[in-house]
Length: 520
Ligand code: AMP
Ligand code: MG
Image 1 (cartoon, rainbow, N blue to C red):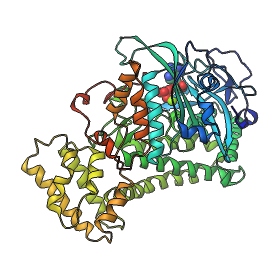
Image 2: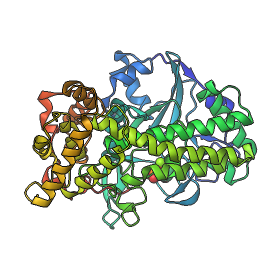
Image 3: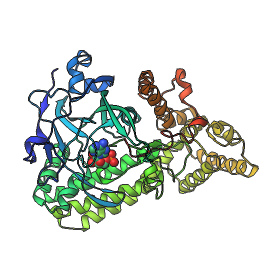
Image 4: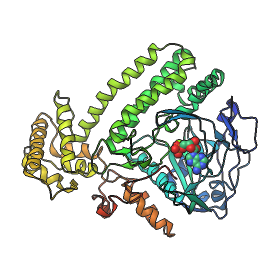
């Protein structure tokens, strides 16, 4: 296995002097050295070939014993020193103190084709940051992370990637619904890959401890390696750095809104400093369009992380990051300006995104109303977001009367459509048609544009659950089928029409399909 290994993180940042693996508060250090756990009977279940090439590995490596052992934590490559990162975070609005990589272990950095990657195992055992937990991950949540992170990438959403999915061969005890019913589940390990796994929380922890020295070292490192286009670290560039993080965070969230992705746990320890979707836990995909929806049962009371609130939470989290960076900047005004810009950019970019979903290329004053009326109509018929937008591209200018028929397959409540509801939908199609007449695109051109932003296939919650149910019985075929399907989410894949359909009725209230807890 030939990898171009680098050590920038460990060489340039302070390490925890203690190398024993016991739980503790780690001060004035960005990480602790730790060795992954040996597992009983490791078995690779799936590999992303694309990531193999991205890292400079070969197809031959994929099938080797060495690959299996390295990417399940059973073999530490020579000249590498695995480590867990120290970070803190605000969880559900409250400062939670030190969290850290409780079950993630960074193996090494790789440089390939002028790109820098961090390679990390999730579920490879305890670290000094494991607190009261076991450092392990179960198969169901690992399948969900593996499939979804790659699916998001192919949807064009900034995200961490995944190289491999493996069984550890060990059993892991979990109380899946937090209802006192503990049970053993299969343990699994996902190899994740990203230019960096740094989170807002990595910066917050040093600010909270008033350790401005380490804070500065980490910010300088981040700018040097990941924001080098900003130039050398300086007070001025700290501001530019924050501005860019704010912009990337917003862009990522707008993408989430576009494809109907709900992260589920937008705590600041789950916010990537690079604006990547990170930590796929109790996430979910909108089926019936609803701003109030969250898949996370742990958040069912306040629904802090519901679909419609994601952009606001992005802003709230950026406030926390601004507070953390303040000691290096010592001026509130530029930070406040950036946060204000986020708000106005959000309004603008969100409308632009909705315009693109509707196939509108020019700006019109009344577009906001058109979008709001659509969102109201969605709720009347419990409307599947993905099916609706994809089918809407078949709309013909001048034929508003056909609108309802074109999108009807997206309704979960087709039988109960009253005259009043039909009327409201028809009114919307009338206004859409009037609006389209201001556009220059032909129906065919509009369709092509819309289909490039409105995916045909997303990883619906029940689809992962089907793959999980099969995998728990030892059948891994569906993992590969979904993996392949989701590589081309915008394409017509006629052999895969069955996945271009509403969520089946049985999945409406099934655990794992619409309800997920943080237990993973
Ligand atoms: P999450 O809610 O998954 O983002 O996790 C929040 C914190 O809990 C992070 O510090 C994780 O590393 C840690 N954590 C979550 N699950 C485990 C686990 N099974 N073992 C150790 N730490 C965990
Ligand atoms: Mg996390």
